[in-house]
Amino acid sequence: MARAASKPAERREKGVAIISALLVVALSAIIVSGLLWRQEVQIRRIENQRLLAQAQWISRSALDWTRLILRSEADTAPNVTYLGGVWGVPIAKTRLSDFLGQIGEVRAQQGASTYLSGSIEDAQAKFNLRNLVSTPTPGLLTINVDEIQSFQRLLTLLGLNGSLAKTVALQLRAGLAQSATRFQTQSTIGTANNTQQSVLQGLAQGGGTGGGNFTDDPGLSDADSNAPVAPLQMINVESLLDVPGFSPEIVDKLRPFVTVLPTTTSVNMNTATAEVVAATVPGMSLSQAQAFVARRETVFFHDVGNVQLALTGAGVKTDGIDMNQMDVTTKYFLIHGRVEHERAEVERTTLLYRDPATHTTRIVYVRDQL
Image 1 (cartoon, helix red, strand yellow):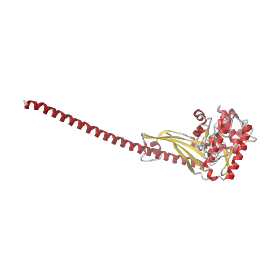
Image 2 (cartoon, rainbow, N blue to C red):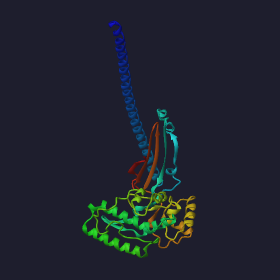
Image 3 (cartoon, one colour):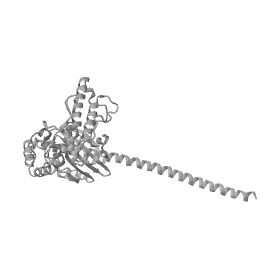
Image 4 (cartoon, one colour):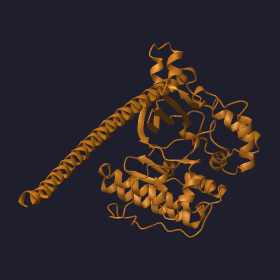
């Protein structure tokens, strides 16, 4: 009887041992598979980082090639920038191996899975918001009435409220005042405030078009250069979202015609759109500007004198027009580039400054599109 009773117990012990062994094997398999999965993820992450780094270096190489194009064109046509130049030809999506093969690179096939595309944009073909504020001396920031009127005309042409131009000018001045505080003295600050107050009073009395309700103190005490509510410095078109009265829809509507550059600039009449031309030239209608642009497509302007003659031919009275607002050459260019390198993608916008004296180029900023 005792032997018969021990057999079921032995069978139960064997069954428990088998189950325990299976559990250990399963647990080991889970742990090992988890380790292998983590290792695979880490390897994939390192590969992605490598591909991204390679794509960024390819983007830098493409930027160097673009800078060479701009320098070469400045050597051949130093005083004129027009849409028919080599810089104005966009690059469609093209294999990198095609570029390398054209120059006889023996490793051209290594770029078979890499694609390049991009374009060069004349930044001075748009209205520069930095022009709304003048700096006659270091630390002295004054509102530029002529430029505010030009911006008001542009807003009106686009069906927007022209009085927003004054608010943008004040916001821009306030941000610049904070960034240049270390260059100011108490006397220059006081002089700047007095000058700005007189200019703004003239605007409020009808010194510019596009009227409407307007305050010269949009949340910022004009006499207090250290006001805690001073706005951030305006660095791009998206900065307009910080200005009261602007919405994402308005900013999207303005983006093709407006930019923010580090310094004041003239509008390149060889590349500007009809809307920007009409806003720059007082008394010019949009239809006249369109006729002006159509004439420009056949023969570009060699100097400002040619521009003045073309404006007269378009039926515009040039008496009293400030020709300093216009030019036929460009210093600032926006480089839009996209690199697709296997799984990595880099889309980058770079602002370049081309020195008209030395024809050298300098990078102002680089922004990656997320």
